[in-house]
Image 1 (cartoon, helix red, strand yellow):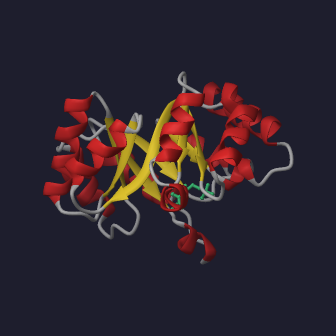
Image 2: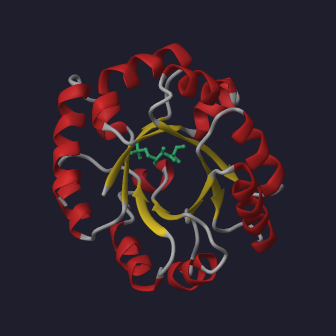
Length: 210
Ligand SMILES: O=C([C@H](O)CO)[C@H](O)[C@H](O)COP(=O)(O)O
């Protein structure tokens, strides 16, 4: 099981500071959608250059032009790029084809997908690398999480790795780990803590034991 740190509410210098603090305890660093909106793909480039040993995920949440956007994120140094599960099949297939060409990986974010099992089964057949269930900020504000959805994709996904994101904290991490995803994604659960390094270290220990 691996741990991904999501950076959402920072600029490039702040992102570098946080990653420097926790780098030894994470496998993947995510340049979150708000960071890409504010800073562009420069943020991906800056983090990859500063931390070449870490895999960098560009959370573009691609909805259209899958091949082109995967190409641009790849040029910036992203190792993994996100595409939305609600997007057209052709968008996901285009993203996968381009990622294969570039030696990169595609993660499908299932945010707001209604038929999680059915869509995960379809998307798994497209050859994506990760399928991620995700409670976004707006869902989290309504007290929701994606833990049941994780169990649902675990039932049907045969080829892709499974991932879970959205509001995961130290207190909820054991429940998440029990469902046995391949990748756990944590943003605020680390970045909002006074001691980010200690929190990332504890989370890493739990994740690696699983
Ligand atoms: O993808 C995310 C969200 O939609 C904002 O772009 C976050 O990276 C993801 O939810 C993980 O962050 P936390 O919910 O703070 O753990």
